[in-house]
Length: 238
Image (cartoon, rainbow, N blue to C red; front, side):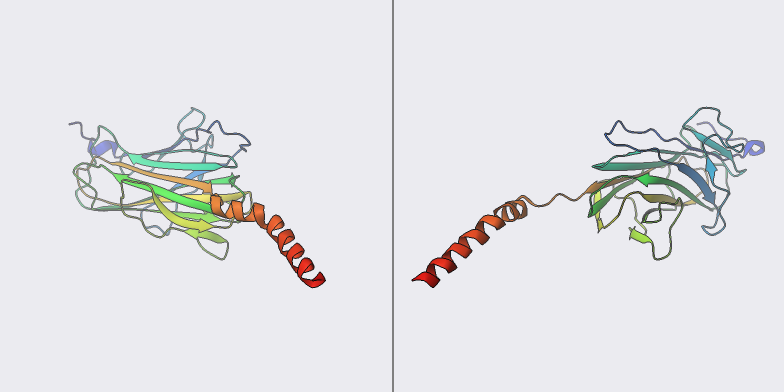
C-alpha cells in the first residue's frame, strides 16, 4: 500500500463539471472551496483560475498543504432534472496524519433550470473509506438567490440537514423554486490516521409529478361543473 511521504503532504482538490446531455440546459457556474473548521473557508476556486493547478478544462485542482484528496463534482441541469455528484477520495493513497483532522469540501452550482415547482430533492451518500472515516456527513442547500455557496438566510429553499451515509437515494422533501436558482453540496469529514478516502454525495433535483388521480380530477372538473349546472337548471324548471 502506497503512503504519502511527509515532505509531500499536499491536498489536491479537484472539481469537474460534466454537463449532462439534457434538453434546455444552461451554462452553470461551478466552484470549489474547502475548510478545516467549517467557518473559515478558502477562496472559492473556479475552473481556469490562477490558483487552479490543473490545465484541463472542467477540473479544478488546488494545493492546500494538508494531504492528498480528490474532490470531483459532476452535474448538469435541465427542466426535468438537475444532478450534483460530489466525490472525495484519495484512491490508492493513505493519509499520513497521526491524529484526527477536520476537513470540509463544498461544491456549488448556479443557474439550475429544473421546474416547474414544486421540486423534489433526493440524495445518496456513500462512504467506503478504508479503514473508515471517524465521522462523515453531507448536507445540501438550495437557494433562490442563484448565487454559489449560499447556506444560510431567508433565501434557503431547502436544507437537508446533516446526512450520514445511507447507501441509497433518500427523499428529503419538496421546495418551491423559481428558475434560475442554486445548489450547494458539502461533505464534512473527521479523518483518522492512515485512511484511504472514498465518499460520494449524489444529489438529484426533479420536478414533482402531479398524481394521475389529480390529473383525472382536474381534467374532469369542467365537465362535472357543467353537469351540475344542467341539473340545477332542470330542477328549477320543474
